[in-house]
Amino acid sequence: MSKRILAYRRLDDQQLEQLREKYQVDYFGKLESADDPAFREALGQANGLIGAGLKITPELLDSAPHLEAIASISVGVDSYPVDELTRRGILLCNTPDVLTETTADTGFSLIMASARRVVELANVVKRGDWQESIGPDRFGIDVHGKTLGMIGFGRIGQAIARRGALGFGMRVLYSNASPKPEIERELGARRCEFNELLETADFVCAIVPLTDETHHLIGAEAFARMKESAIFINLARGAVVDEPAMIEALQRGQIRAAGLDVFEQEPLPSSSPLTQMDNVVALPHIGSATMETRTAMAQRAVDNILLALDGERPLSPFNVEAWGDRLT
Ligand code: 8YV
Image (cartoon, rainbow, N blue to C red; front, side, top):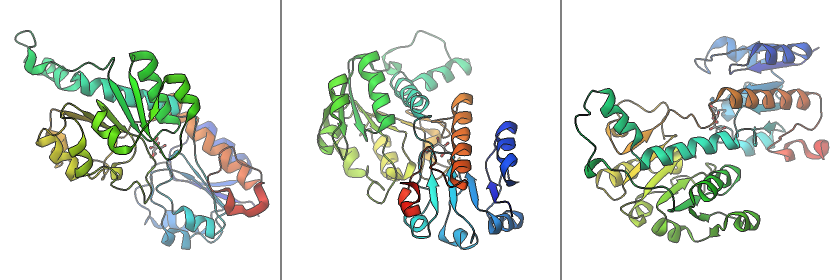
């Protein structure tokens, strides 16, 4: 009997066709809830999953007794219980590389928009409130020549740093579990202690995976260490930051501004004080959201699931150990 794939994120026609050529596909292009009975039924028969944006719990896995592999349309794997998947012999694949440059572009647009108050001042014009030339109370701060502090220095962090160092003459500091000598040489970047970074950087940019270790990594103490003129950027995951502590730091003027693509609760509730603050640029989690990149991410996931269900090594497996010797 042919294997079954359950797709729970929008795929384009050609990608769906690619899956259907080899397997039976249950397609939920816009899944409203994991409790949808039709989805649950499909889960019960699925050998492969492809999708994103759904928290995969051990309870959901209990309803998927035939599951062999999951292809996530994301680089972040914080929606998956990775150890549990490994224990159950389920291979997880993600989509690194294809989104690096696009996500770094988003990061840099947050840096620019927060420093130059782009959204706030564009709204002045839109409201018809541009009555006189802009004075010091609405001046921004320079980006070029400043110090960029990267919390996390993986592919995306390095791509942001490259933009800062090579495009804007910024000094780059980074805090990361392992040193990155090659990019240190390329950009003149320097690895430093977390606290030194917080105390020195003009732009503090979080781009670490969300794990037990990074949960609420940046809280009240971290904000207290930042310069009053510092701008905080979060391109990682909302839960890397203690959000109430960040809101308080912004309200008390402990830091100057924030540029945020991610939040503890997404979509961000309209009642959040962050929606009301002029010194906050808040985006609806668009790090990788361009036509080209989202298409490439979905394609990577399609390729990953097809290879995995064929018993071949996918392009980007995350927990190879789940399949023991099968992929080595
Ligand atoms: C995903 C992301 O598209 O890849 C990631 O980890 O944050 C985004 O680019 C998003 O998680 C999908 O919902």
